[in-house]
Image (cartoon, rainbow over all chains, first blue to last red; front, side, top):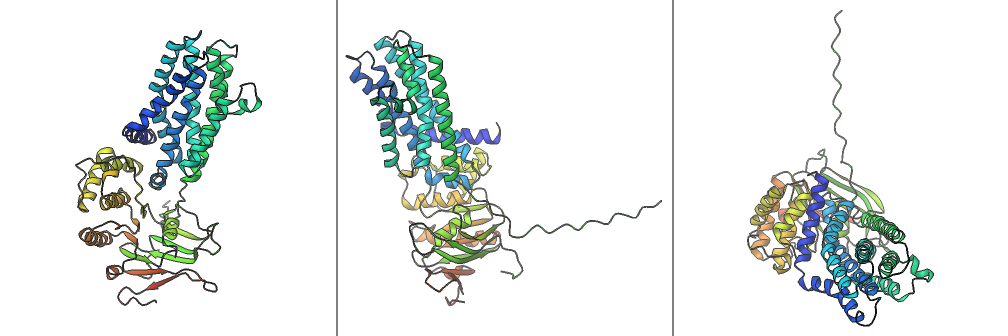
Amino acid sequence: MGNAAGRIVTIAEMQGRDLSRRWLALGLLVALPLSFYGALAPHDRHAPIPGGIAMAFSMAGVAIFAVLAARRVDERLALASLRARELMAGRLLCLVALSVPIVGGTAALMAAVSNPPRPWVLGIGVAMVALVAVPFGLAVGALVPRELEATLILIGVVGIQLSLDPSVGLAKVLPFYGPERQIDSSLGSSYPVRTAVAISVVYAAALLVVALLFMGRRVRVRRHPPPTPLPAIPAQEAPARRD
Amino acid sequence: MTPNEPPLLSATGIWKSFRRRTKPVLRNAELRVCAGEVVALVGENGAGKTTLLRICAGLSAPDAGQVLAAGSIGYCPQEPGVFDLLTADEHMVLFGRAVGLSRTAAVMQGKKLLQGFGFSSEHGDVARELSGGARQKLNVALALLGDPPVLLLDEPYQGFDRGAYVNFWDHVQTWRDEGRAVVVVTHLLAELDRVDRIVELSIPTAGRAMAAAEVEPESGKVG
C-alpha cells in the first residue's frame, strides 16, 4: 500500500475506532431518521421524504463532530507531515463506510413500509442524502470553530429544506434539493432521476472542495527554511588532459 | 553554545498581534537553540510564550520576522492534543504513520517512550480514562515519535507528580546529550539550573521594542 493510501486508511481506521466507542451517539444516529419516518409513516404516504432527508441530521452531524473533535489533534498530525487532504480523505472514507449500513437499513425499512412504486429510486435517493450530508458536515466542521455554531447551521439548513415546498426558489439552491426530489420521484413524481442524481453529485463535489479549502487553512503548517545553506562542495578541478 | 555553531532553530525579529488585542503579543522576539542545548522559555502569563512556540513550530504565522529550522520539529502543546476515545497504542499508530513509521515500529517506539516516563500502555485504556499526568505523558511521547531533532515543549509536565517531574528533567538532559535542540516553556524556576540558557519574554510596553532577554541560568540575572 502506498504511503498516502496507508495514511488515509489509518486515519479512517482510527476515526472508526473512535466512533465505534460512542454507542449512544451511534444509536441516536440510526434512531433519528427512523423516528422522523416512524412519526409520519402511518398517515402520510410521503413520509420517506422527511425520513430520508432527516438522515442528513445524522450523517452531517457525525461528520461535524468528527472534524471538530479532532481539531487540536489535526494540527499536530499536520505538523507531523499529514496533509489536510489526507485527513479529509480518511474521515470521508470512514463516514462513507459508516453510512452504507445506515442507508441500506433506512431505505429497506421505508421501502417495506411505504411500498413506493420505484423502491430502487428510493434507495438511491437515500444514498444521495448521505452523499451530500457527509461533505456538508465536513465543510461546516472545517468552517466554524465550535459545535454549537455548527449544529445551528445544520439545523437551519436541513430544517429549511424540510419546511420549504420544492418549487420555491430557495429550496432549489439548498444542498438536499436533489435527494429530496429523487425520493419524491420514487413515490410517483415525474422529476427525472438523472437530474436529481447529477444535482446531488455536483453539490457533494462542491461541498468537498469547500471542506478541503477550509481544512487546508485550518491545519496549515509553515515549513521553515534551514538556518544556513548547506556548505557548497568545492568543485573538483578537472584533471589535466594528457594528449 | 559555540558562537559560530548554526542553530537548529532560530526565530528572529518576531512580531505578532491578535485582532482582539490592541497591543502586540510579541515585539521583536528572538529565540535560538543549537544542537545539544536546552533553552527555558520563561515569562509571566500573557507574555507570548505559547504564541512564540507555535510560530516556531509553524502552526501560527508571525506578522513579521523569520523562523529557520533544521529538520523536523516535535511539538508538545500545553493542552493534550489527543483523541479521548483512542488508546495510547492507537495514538502511536496514527502519529507514527504521520512521521513515516510502520504500525509495528510506531507501537514499539511509543511503548518504549511511555515506559521511559513510567507509564505502561498495556491496559489499553482510552485517553479519556487516563489520569491527567498519564495523558500528559502520552502528549509528550507523541511529540517525540520519529526522533525529531528539535523539541518544543509547552509546559509539558502539567499533572506530573514529583517523581515524574524529576524524571522528565532527566529525560531533558538525555535529549540534550543526544544532540537535540530542546525548548521548554516553564513557570517553575527550581529546575532552571538544568538548562543551558533562559530566554525571558516580557509583556511588551510602550517604547520597549525588545520583548526577549537572555538570563544566565546560574544567577537568574538578566543579561
